[in-house]
Amino acid sequence: MTTETSGTVRIEDDGTGTVRMDRVYPTGIDDLWDAVTDPTRLARWLVVSLEGTPVLGATVRAQFTSHWDGTVRIDTCDRPEHVCVTMTSDDGTTVTEAWLTAVDDQHTRLVLEERGFRADEVADHGAGWQVHVEDLGTALDGGFPEPWLPRWRALQPGYVASLS
Image (cartoon, rainbow, N blue to C red):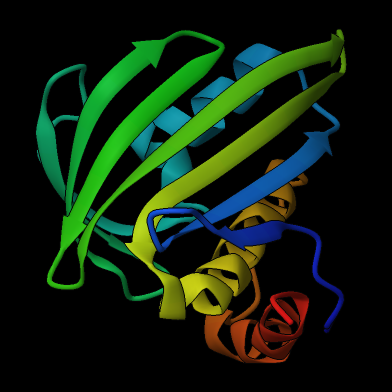
């Protein structure tokens, strides 16, 4: 189990937190797009349950493997390069964006950013999104992600330290 952080976290001038993940996956852009937008594929690495039809402008209810539970409004959906959603739960509202860029025919860069959460949650969100993007890689390789919480616990102190 890794404890090395691979994302970046920061506190913005307005006091909110931002997490950014940047990773290249060994797959084409269309395949990665489907993995981050298709409900069946999302179920392999991120979403435990989904109620509603995720189309542009719609709001769906979702629960993630990280136990996040709330609504997701699809604000932008520009296949295969950009998706932006507004996520609302009891803890507040954040915006999450994903940008996909083909590196070549067999590799695609995913840059994922979540912003707008409380500053004291930065390390938690950093560790959480790192586990999620690692799980995406596992799913793309045909595997099944390991339990989420122990991996989050191993990564969270590194994100705390990165803020010092």
